[in-house]
Length: 311
Image (cartoon, rainbow, N blue to C red):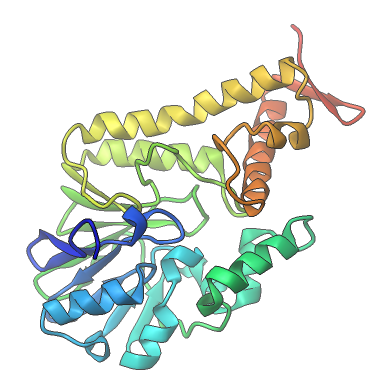
């Protein structure tokens, strides 16, 4: 028995289907729009929680008419292919998501794992925990940034906010007072940008754009409750993590952790490495910080070692 209800209504006809394990990876929350067009936004929540929510609302899996995917990540596209086969429904995503959603190789390219030392570990991780994402997904269409998607009385407004991934899209719900923040997730860990198609500067700009939108309520993919109290403060704290990490990178380089490999063993981004596959993500994120610091003239690399640039 779950320690919290499987689903809650976050606004009229909009239900948050909560992931197991408090929606921590490898789970992620899903939105179910119980409107004229029964719509699922993301499909990374367990099938048990999705089907239970549908049943509680008087539906079956086969009733789903549309799946909207926020981005290509495994904990978000999740069970979408299985659900589509059961429901014969449409599946739509941002145009930039198609490659990473449709095929396993496209997803591999977007993650950027192929040819890296941790590829076999990552693939074994997928085989063990995410076997259901290894096949093809039948994307039937795409949505347009800013163009509302009608579910009946409910409108979902795509807000393309890259950085976490190139395709990452949030959704305003009947305007922008309530926003599905997806992986601008407000968790204590902070921003995650451990893929080939992740970008720190884009991510910063995306968080700043959400702050400018000034929503009253933010719904995270990895928190089981919407955030309404002090949302602006939470967003600004989330944004500050980028600079806090950059300072740790500089501190570590100054103290002899002068390669990405050494910093990843410390580690620097993650508080700890729970599984070896996470080190691959740590390395990706460190590489992005190092590249930015080089470009700003704050560090240099000599004979394979990083040094603080003295001025």
